[in-house]
Image (cartoon, rainbow, N blue to C red; front, side, top):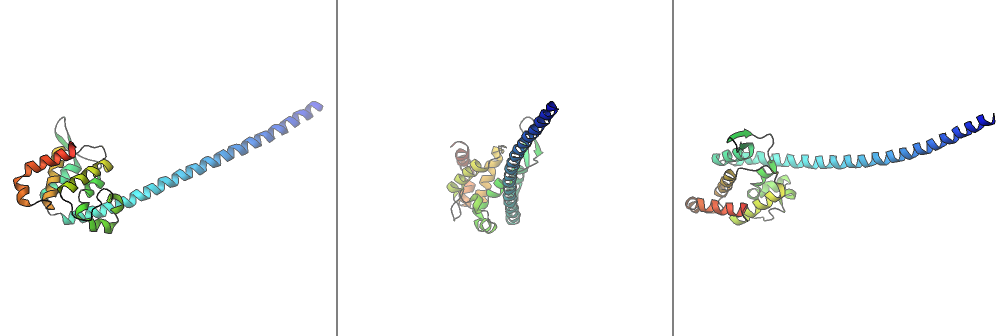
Length: 198
């Protein structure tokens, strides 16, 4: 009878210990759940911010497509951003994803009022803090800053990129058209040197 009583007392004490462990596990679980909830909120906030940014960029691109009338510029943009060339066989493939941010921001300095209206300044203002239309030097510096900030590690075709930058310089008259026509190769070499070798 005494042995049975000790066994019962041991069981009762063990049960009390299990309850303490259970409470400790529960406290650990609560802390873990709270940390996961905090992380989930951060992810949700980041997603909302990116969604808001993507909406603004889409609105800017829509505006841009209505504004740009130069067909050659549109064709180079399309080929540069929507296609990728396989260097092994020189075949072009359609990209699944494009870097819409970089595509839009090639043009932001020329439409700063629209970018401001859409609230894009928080994303590009540090890259191009000027309130005036760029010249060739400030535009190339802007492109270097843009590449450093938003490059997606998908290489752009160098020849097409240089052609695009030249066409943008032509379209937005960052130099006189006569000078651009007469010195096209020289200007493209200057752009290449600045973008790729400095």
